[in-house]
Image 1 (cartoon, rainbow, N blue to C red):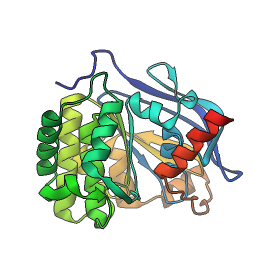
Image 2: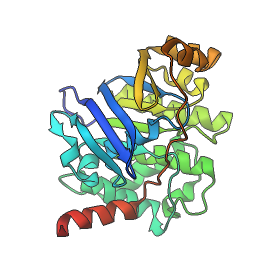
Image 3: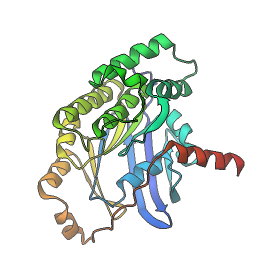
Image 4: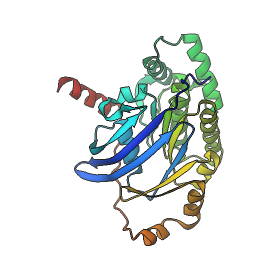
Length: 282
C-alpha cells in the first residue's frame, strides 16, 4: 500500500522564469509531470537543470519572476518549503549537507511526523528504518549517526534515497543522485528508486549525465534544457541519442550558443529556515 489516494497527482509548470542574484536563468519553462511518469531532464552543465528543481522546491535564493507552478491544483509558489514537502514534493540534492548534532533517526522521525496526522510509533519507525537501511545496503549504525556527517559522497547519495523511501513523496526530484557512485552503488540506488516508483506510482524528474542510470530507471519522457529553455522533448530514444552523439548536433540544428556555467547554490536547512522567519516577521 502506498498511502496515496486514488486520484492522479500532477505537477504543472507554465512559462516559468527564474533569476539568481539578478541574472535570469530560466526563460519560460513549460513542464507537466504526472503520477507513474519518469522524466529525464538533460542538458549540458550551466543551463538551468538544478535551478529548475531548486525553484520547484522553494530555495530562497532563486527568485521566480513570472510563471506558475501548480501541484494537484494548488499554487506551489504560495507555499513555504515545509508546506511543499508536506504536499508530497521531495528533492534529493546533488550536494547533501552535513548537519552535526542531529541523528538520521531524529531527523527522519520528525520529518515523517510533520507529514502525518498521528505520529508514527517508535516501534513502527525503527522497523521501517531498519528495512530501508538494509535495502540500500548501508551500515546498521546509520540511524544513530549525525545527518551526513563524515559520510562519503556515495553514502550521502544513498542516504538521500533512504529519506525518500521513508518520507514516501508523491513527486520526487533527483539532482544527479548518481554522480560519485560506483557501479554497484549505482545499481543499488536505481533498484531502490525503481521499486518505490513501481509500488507507489510516484512521478519523478531525474537529472543525470549518465545514460546507464537512465537505462536502469527507464524514463517515460525526456527533455533537453539549453540556455534556460526546453529545446527538445522525446522519450528514452532521445536519451540514447544524446548519449551516443552528445549535444553538438542540437546546437547546430537549433542554432544555439553554449551557456555560461550555471550558478550553483547550496540548498541548506539554515537558508530555508531564515527565509521562513523572514516571511513571518516581514
